[in-house]
Length: 303
Ligand SMILES: Nc1ncnc2c1ncn2[C@@H]1O[C@H](COP(=O)(O)OP(=O)(O)OP(=O)(O)O)[C@@H](O)[C@H]1O
Ligand SMILES: [Mg+2]
Image (tube, rainbow, N blue to C red; front, side, top):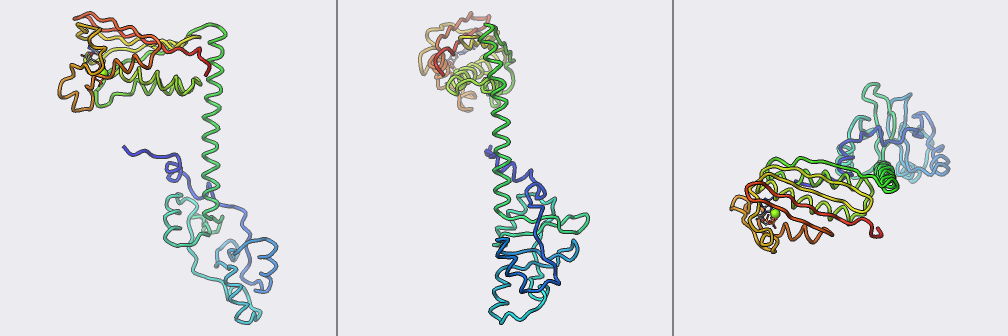
């Protein structure tokens, strides 16, 4: 699966009307060429759309103005010197469409036309687009920050009240889809405002336990308790059980069959990995009855 960045997502979601500059300075076709000198100078612009009412008649740029000057600067109407063939976009075009076309056109200022009325309703430059993308990203970032902040207050309350937050997950499904339980937990812990290291360690424990359950017992459940001092995780199944719980803790020990190895599991590193990530780990199992793994991650350490 290819990863889609937030920017790529936005480029497909946003329309030009979301990013275009709406109050556009324009000139009328009947204005004199000599008037442009003052306009370009004082407004610090390098071109302007020429509007006949709300219709786009053309674009006049500083290059057109210079060409007119070097040709003698004989007074005439703007409509005689403007470029009439103008590339435009519709306000409901997507950013991705506009960016592709800008790339091909090799220049960067496009009037935007309202598809319904046919009138010009804005202008877009690459600068606008970048600015809008940055603003969107900032909003997104800000929302996520607020969510985390609120959630971490919830966590502060848990600490203060010495209460516990409990999450329960059912583990089931195809091994090839493993990871749903652990990524659910990861998101939750992140939102609670835990330090990335705590989140990462808890997610690894959950992931390794989840795959072990799927491989050996097909299904099971995970209970996670967020307590003032620790994250406690209990993963249980009613599978075949483990004959020798000390043996399976050895790095490299595995009974995984070929079909499991073909999916990339079976290195015998899951349980050792869980041990490494947890501050305390207890593995209990009864052959024919099932397996219960308990792991805790200390959260009292300075974060
Ligand atoms: N829930 C369980 N039920 C029964 N047996 C288990 C369970 N969890 C682990 N085991 C046994 O312990 C062995 C070692 O597990 P461990 O997670 O360390 O390695 P693995 O799953 O074989 O490979 P890896 O995790 O590296 O992909 C397994 O091969 C299996 O025999
Ligand atoms: Mg494993």
